[in-house]
Length: 327
Image 1 (tube, rainbow, N blue to C red):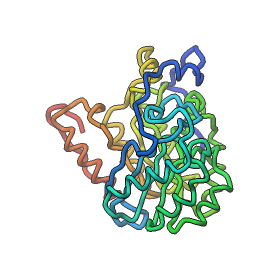
Image 2: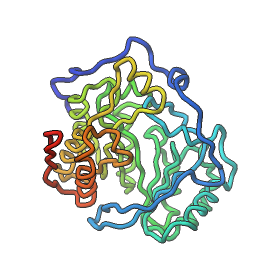
Image 3: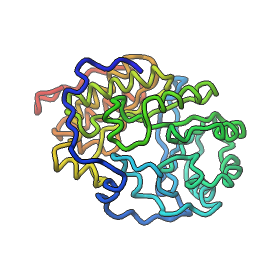
Image 4: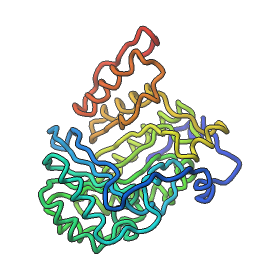
């Protein structure tokens, strides 16, 4: 692990009650109605590849059983089932989406949890899934570091394209990571990276900008340290995600002053920092960003700037806004 900054716990504000899976679940609302025979969403968007080319990438959001890890910040449970989907459901979902998407060479299969969790995606479906993915050059799936095992290699070997795996680091702050109820340590993440890299599987990671218990300054600092930690462990691509309210637990923490969403400028700063390292791709997650903006006059310009930086992977001059007097 990299040495933590000297201001290790400055700005950290932990509650005096225990955050457990039971408490997190008690704060939830209702799940959305989903159809186990259909993905709950699918889309195509442009992404800069490791080669430097910019190409269309399909993403299919699969409907399946809820992730067994009850993470504090997660809202993906909203589009999951209560039980394992029937054998054949996941291939049917992929086929449903592919029949409605344009032809592309790269695909992400996000299943609101862990692709190699047998209670989410039945292993009996792997042959049909592999057959459907035959025409893709790269296949990205998501998985928890604690569920990385040699079983993945058989799936990799049968794919026509290259397997990539996305894992949530969330934060390199060990105490905050523990409070996220993610059931992993930084060592767990490092060991998963060693295994995947030694088996020629590229690693993408998700990093939270300002998770609970950190102030704005510390949120920026630890997002940057998390990028450092990721690249130090052989991660090829970092995706910085501003921590969003709306899952119940974060809203409860916000009412008690333990959580506040980050500023848009903080995401810009962390994105710029990561790209400037030139150690791998760094993307800012641009979904529903307007909620983090405090100035409607400059929001679209700043969104366009971050999109360009995602695509070009180079620094672009900051937007100056006379209305809010900030860059």
